[in-house]
Amino acid sequence: MRGERRWTRRNVALLVVGVILGLGTIFPLVWMVVGAFKTAAEVNSSSLIPSEITFDNFRYVFTQVPFLRYMLNSLFVAGLVTVLALWFHSMAAYALARLRFPGRETVFLLIFSTLLVSLPVILIPTFVVIRTLGLVDSYAGLVIPAIFNAFGIFLLRQFYISLPGELEEAALVDGAGYWRIYRSIILPLSRPIMAALAVFFFLANWNSFVWPLTITSNPDLRVVQVGIATFQQQYVSDWNYVLAAATVAALPTLLMFFFFQKQIVESIKTAGFK
Image 1: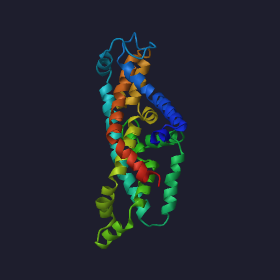
Image 2: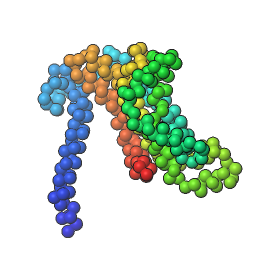
Image 3: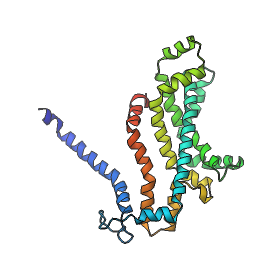
Image 4: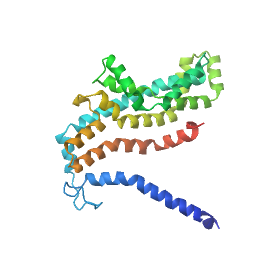
């Protein structure tokens, strides 16, 4: 009886739809990885499985173009943005969730409203501000505008609101100030949501393309996504090199997801949408 209830027509239909969607989702990734091991003569063929596996594409990417430099630039920018964003966002979210001051809700609504503004809308004003500050073609120009993100503040605020107020009241009775409460109580309790946000921030900045392309023209400051775009223009017919570069660029994001997938799922389940 239990097996009959499990394999109803509705469940079978949902399973088929899920399998089709899953295959459609991972097929571009599989095609990219397989194509990275094909020869130049075979990369445009309709066959998915290469007849001859070669590693020359990866060797070419790392020896003929400064691809390692692009990877290190992305690693530095994404890592620094992640650390600074978590620090500033957690302090802002704590203040908006636990402190009482005039205009608190107005400030939060103003921050939250920026979620409705897309990057192309603010691209030119942000570029004018960065140019006025003299930060064009610099790491600071790549990092500073990417730090501020309303999504992180919103998610952390929702998590801090769910924390029991007795913890904070007990700490205040013991003489702890707000800074010590934030550092000794709030931050340790928010490790799961911070880990999930760290993954989101790192992935977003590792894959960023429009802003780095806008703010930098120095080849030494190119991040990996911009590097792949220029690489594609340079070797427009050599898709085996482009696919090899894209495969290498995707490895850090896949590794982060596999290592932190539990934290991502748990944070969204427990705090993300309360």
